[in-house]
Amino acid sequence: MAGREHIIEVKDLVKKFGSFTANDRLSFHVERGEIFGFLGANGAGKTTAMRILCGLSYPTSGEIRVAGFDVYREREQIKKRIGYMSQKFSLYEDLTVSENIHLYAGIYGLGRKQILAREAQLLERLGLEGIRKRLIAGIPLGWKQKLAFSVAIFHQPAIVFLDEPTGGVDPITRRQFWEMIHDAAGEGITVFVTTHYMDEAEYCDRVSIMVDGRIDALDTPGALKQQYKSENMNEVFLKLARA
Amino acid sequence: MKRFFGFVRKEFQHIFRDKRTLLILFGLPVVMIVLFGFVVSTEIRDVKVGVWDRSMDQASIRATQKIFSSGYFLPAGYIDHEEEIGELFRGGKARVVVVFEEGFEGKLLRENRAAIKLITDASDANTAQLSLTYLQGVLMSYFQSMNQDVQLPWSVQIKSRMFYNEEMKGAYMFVPGLMALILMLISALMTSVTITREKEFGTMELLLASPLKPREIILGKVTPYVLLSFTNAMTIVLLGFLVFHVPVRGSLWLLMLECMLYISLALSLGVLISIKAKSQQMAMFMSMLGLMLPTILLSGFIFPIDNMPEILQWVSTIMPARWFIVIVKNIMLKGTGMAFIWKETLILMGMTLFFILAAVKQFKIRLN
Image (cartoon, each protein chain N blue to C red):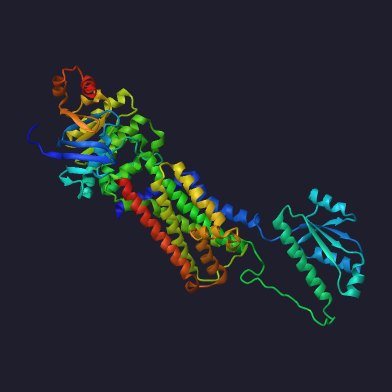
C-alpha cells in the first residue's frame, strides 16, 4: 500500500483536560480508501482523538491535517468532506426514514433531485423501500444502525468516522454492518472506526491500539498477531494492556 | 440558506409531532388566561352578608336594602345575638356581618352621627379587605345622598377615581403579567429543553460535525420558537381584549416590537441554560426554578414590588419580567409611547445582549 495518499496526517497530537492527558503525542497517518481501526479500552482516549479529527474539539498541540486541511484553521472545509456516526444512536426518532435522509442530505448541501435519486437507490439496496414513511422510533435497532451509517455516507464524504458503531447490536447485524463498511471502502471512502470488539479488528486493513492515551501498536492485523505471537487480536490486545 | 431552512423545517416537525409540546404551546396560554380571568379576581361578587340590626328602624332597614341592591352582596339572614356571628363565619354562611347600633335612626337625626360595625371573616384576608372597601363605599354613598339637601357647616367629600382601570378590573393586572410569564415559559423552557434533547440523544454531535455552523444550529433551533412565542403573545392580547375587554390604548406595533425584544431575551436565556444543563430534566428544573418562580413572585405580577422588603426589591430589578410588565402596562393601559418606556426597553436590551454574550462564551468553553 506504499505510496498512497495520506488522507489523515497526525503528528504529535496532544490533548489535555486540565492536568489529565487524554492523548499523549499521537502520531499516525491514514491512507485514502483504507479501513483504519482505532482500538483501545474504554477511556484510552479513542473518542477524544476522533472528536479532534472531526473538528468537534481543539487539540492542545500537534500538527493535524484531515482530507488535506488543517484542523485549527480549516474546520469548515474538513466538515464538508467527512461523515460522522456517533456512539449514541443518532437519527431523529420522531422523523420518518425519508425525512432523516432529506434533513442530513440537505445539511450537506445536496440538491433535491440528487437526494431523491440516491434515496431510492439506498432504500432499494437495503430493502427498506416499504418503510420510507415510517418513524425511526418504530423500526428495529439493526435497521436503524444500517440507516444511520448510510446517512453518514449519503453525501459521499472522503472519510467517514464511526465511533463504536456496533455497540449493542446482535452478531448477525454486526456482520452485515461490516459488509456495508467494506462496500463503502470499495467505493473509495476512507473508514476510520473505533471499536473495543477485538474480533472486528480483523476486518480492518490496519489497526492502531491505544493504551492510556498513547498508541502502543500500529500495523495490519496479520503483522500484529505475528509480532505479538498471538492467535487473534484479542490476545494481542491483552498482551499490550498488561505490559 | 437552503441548509438552514431544511434544519428549521425539521424543528417544526419535532414540535408538531409531539403532543405534549403542542399542548404546552397552545393549550397553556388559553388555559392560563381563562383560569386567571375567572379564578384570580380582585373584584368581589356575591359575598354573603349577615345583618344584626339592633334598632330595626327606617334608616337601618334602608341601608340594609341598599347593601343588597348593590349587586355585590347576598343576604345571609338576620341574627340577633353576638354569638351567632361566630356561627355564621364558622359555618361559612357569611363573610361579613353588618351591625347597626341601637336607636340608629334617632342618633343619626339628633346627633348627626350613628355607628355601623362591619365584622369580617379575615381568615380569607383578601376577600375580607375587599368586602370592607366595597361595603364602606356603598354605605357612604347612600348616606351622602340622604344628606344632599341638608347643608352642613363643614363637610369633606372624598371622591376617588381609578385612572387607567376605572372599574378595578383584575384582567388589567394579570394580562400583562401573564404575557411576561407565558413568553418566559415557552421561550426559555422550550428552547432549553429542545437543545438539551439533541445533546442527550447524540444528534448534537452529528450537527456539530456537519458543515452547519454552531450559530446556524442555535438559530435554527430557536427560530420556530420565536414565531410560536410571538403568535402566543398576540393570542394573549386578543383573548384579553375579546374576553376581558383589556384594551391596547397605545401603539400595537410598539407592543409587538417590545414582545419580540422580550422573546429574544427569554430565548437567549434558554440557550444559556441549555449549554449549562446536561439533561432535559436538568434544563427543565433550571428553567422552572430559576425563571418561572421568580417571574411569578418577584416581577410585580401578583405581589406589589413596593411592599417587598428592600432586599427583594433589589432582587426584582434583575427580573426581566419586571421591566416587561411595566412596558406592557404602559402601552396597553396608559397608551404611552417610547418616551415613557425607553429606560425599561434599554434595560431589556442590555440584558438580552448580556445573555447572548454569556451563551457564546459558555459555548466556546464547552467546545474546548
